[in-house]
Structures are given as structure tokens and as C-alpha cells.
Length: 407
Image (cartoon, rainbow, N blue to C red; front, side, top):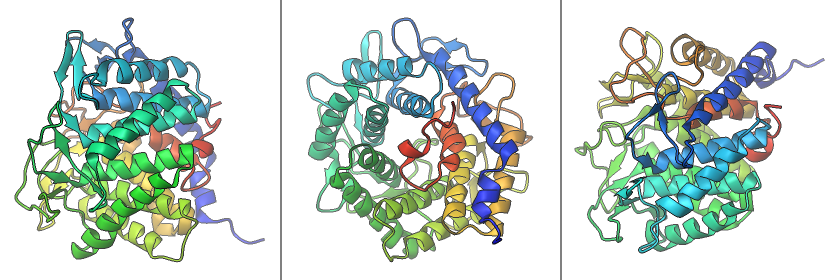
């Protein structure tokens, strides 16, 4: 009898699968506390208590909507009310009834930050796609609207990339171009293709991927600069928001881009291209560049490949888990299996909160939960995907792959 593929022995190992299922359900239970009586989503502290006075941001609304749609498809209880609340918040509160598009944040008094950012709008597309896949009626309206907004303002047909940011009335205030919003554009467009089957979404994702993984990555030793000028030249001097736009390179994004490249290749019928090899090289380069001896990843590197920001966050670990799981499914090696075990060991040692549920978003140099960048627990999206996507049988068709995993 031939030996089982490494992916079968690693990804389906019973005790870990059982823990992943338990953690996913505990996360979904924890973040249900975000839903307030007025239908808004609150930011939660580490123990799950609402933090008062915070505006509701677009990424909070969209990521919760997407995550609970995944939870609903996976068979977890009481997810539909969260998805419905998110859809109403997007259509009734974030959506700008005058100028169109989706405002970055709002409070009870109305918009707080009315700017229209590609990053946030890509998550609107992701949330709409996942809600549609979960069977929510309002999702079709949201999907139609966000598609037209992206078409009109963000998608640059000549470049095959996303424009970055506008004022609330779509006035131009910046010539900045960024990799991060385009990467999430790939993620959202692949989700939209999986939810609808419309070829346009797959084609646009492919054009973005070709620029970053076919042009930029090979020119930079398979590292991905984050920041660009208006004509898409690397801007090595740019330094913006320390969380969303830090200087240099962010290796965690290479995990995401590598996985998405392989997802696109699979959805495209596995053509005879070097996409799997490019995806693997992006992922492996980021693993070796940014892994810290004490466990976890450095957040950013400078252009000399030296650690620039050593802070350790949860999301690069979760994205590395998903990326390495993808490698294991395609052509897994013993080294992939070692990395997969190492990543989960670090997650369990430092980041997974076994008392309250959810993951601690950051740890200090001693490995203790910290709040230098993140207050409370702002997110379920990265960690929930790490607990669901590796268990899906394939490297694409995630809505089909996660079905009933949490029943």
C-alpha cells in the first residue's frame, strides 16, 4: 500500500483538527458579543466586554460579516444575525447616500471618517461575496453596488490594478499606490468568483497577481515592497501609518499573496505555468526572512532585509498557517510539515486565548499579551480562516470546502 501524502497525515491529524474546530467555535462565540442592541458592532476588550466610544470602522463591519458568513456555511450556530447586522450596517450606515461608496467609519451622529479607501472597499466585496454564498438576500444588492463602485473609481483598466484613496466626494487627495489594498483586492475578487462564477472577477485578480508576483517579486528577490508612486514605481522612502502602511516590506503579506496566487491557479484549471513555484518561493522567502528565534514573525523588514519592526502580531502567524497548508495540499514536503507544526505550536503558546476565546493580537518581547498597537481583540477574520481553510480539501472553492466543518 502506498504511503499517504504528507498533507493527509498532517492536515487531517485528529487531535489538531479537534482543537481547530473547538477554537473556531469559541472564537465565533466570543465575537458574538460585538453585536449591540442598536445593531452596531462594538470593539471588544480582551475579556469580551464592549469598549465604549469607538466609531464603527469599515474593516470591523466587513470582516465580521465575512467571518460569520463562513461560520454559517460551516454549520456553527447563531451566525445569521451577525451577517444580517453587518449587511444592514454596510447598506444603511457605511454607504454614502450622496456620493456613493462606503465611508471608513461612523458613529451614532453619522460619518466620522468619510474617506473612500480601496482597502476598505475590497473588504466590502469580500463580505458581500461571503454573505451571498451563505444565502443572504441583501448580499446581492450589496454585491451589485460595490461592483459598480469598484468599476467606476478604483479599478484602473489600463494598469490592471486598484487606485488607492479618495475623499468623501471622490476628490483626489493622494497619489499613493499600495500593494496591501491590491492584495486584498485579489482575495475579494477570488471570493466573488467563487460565489458567482463571473469570469471578470477571476480575470481582474489574475492581472493584479501578474504584476506583483510576475513582475515585482522576481525583481526584488521574491520580496514584496509595500508602497508605490502613482506610476507604480517602488517608493522605498514611504512611511505611513505604522500598522497599515509601515515602511519597507511586510513578510506576512507574502504569505497571503503566495496562497492567493495558488488559489487563482487552481480556479483557472491548473494551467501549465510556474504559479505554484512562484507561490512557494514567496511563502518560503517570508518564512526564512522574518521568523524570530523566540517564535513568531517580525512585522516588517527594511530594504536590506534587516528587522525593522520586531513586534509580534497574530495575523502573520495565521496567514503563514494558511499558506503552508496550501503548500502541503499542492506538493507538500517534510519541511512544510515541520513548519505547519511549528506555527501551530507558536499559536498555542502565545496567541490563542484559552480562557476567553479568540487570539491575542500582539505580544511583547517576553511573549506576554500587549496593547501597543491593538486595543482589545479587534478581529476574528485572520484566525478563523486559519482554523477553517487548512481543513478544506482543496486550495480553492473555500465556500464549498468549509461546508459543515463546524457541525
